[in-house]
Image (cartoon, rainbow, N blue to C red; front, top):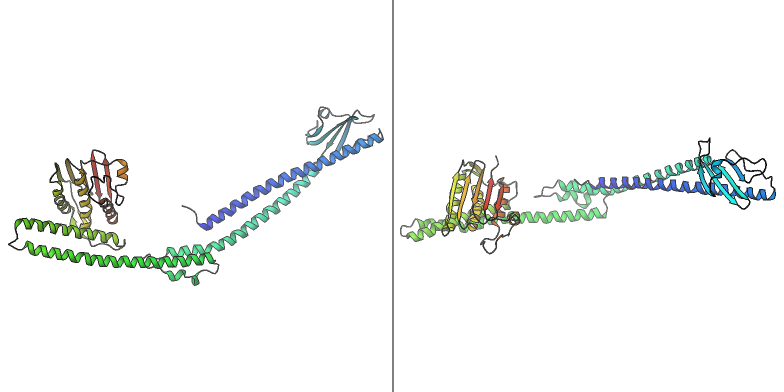
Length: 428
């Protein structure tokens, strides 16, 4: 999960402080090394120039000799110190060497001129200590300033983010059907809320009001559609019932009226299914206990006319059908869509409806689907074979949405040229 904005800001400032510490530390160390080199080179070169000037004025000018500096010269004068072997082998320039019998590394200057070669050793440990102390003090002050500035900046940024977090918490408590927009009105915002938070608050209030209007319109539509769509169907059903009861009605007309009644019942089932999808999730549809086998037999009979002109047999195999509690018309719509698809895409062979305790399987020997078509089979308006299919491409999409809503998931297995298996599973 992506961390929240306050935590991300905190991590950003911690990373900034760490990177700043690394850069400052490296800078202080490099600056200290540069300062040390400049001081030592200048001191030793000045001592060499002073020695050569003195020797030019007086051949007996003494070599440098202090607690930290020792000089040698070749060729020397009587009384001059013997040049150590490690120095005699050195080329002109500046070095750091460890002389025989010493554990310290000394800075060495080899200054070669026409008059001879001057060797100077210098113990710069006191300069190293002074530079080290200065560098540590500078480093500590720099790091302290960096951490202090980062902390103050973080506290300021956090105060700016707190109103946004408060606003998110308030919005998360909303009931989508009746959002409490009063809680986030600009006058209710925290004191530290800036102009951006006020604009966000006004935008959320406006959005909530629009959503509330949409929900109200959806409720009105669901209520009105339930009434207005059922009214003509009721008229059709009553009229057909009266005509079916008329003894003068011919057998041919009776068969047509029976088809009209079946189509009316199918239309009512579809309307109920659409209204279930339109309602909110916590509004349960009208349910009853029913036999799954009854729904299957009814839908199989409904689809038989579609197979009248095809060498396709349809069979129901009952391995233990169960009773369910739910809206029977929803299962009828789901199963009807699956059987209609099987009938459309099966030109020969058979269609089997297998009833198990926990599922219904519709198996056909039709054309099947390739992996790409199978992956998109539930997409609204998708038609795998537009030249063959007569529907709108909504059947499987509606069936799956109904199954997800009722806890009866729908799954497909298919292989091109070998048919399709559609399974509706019932929750245990």
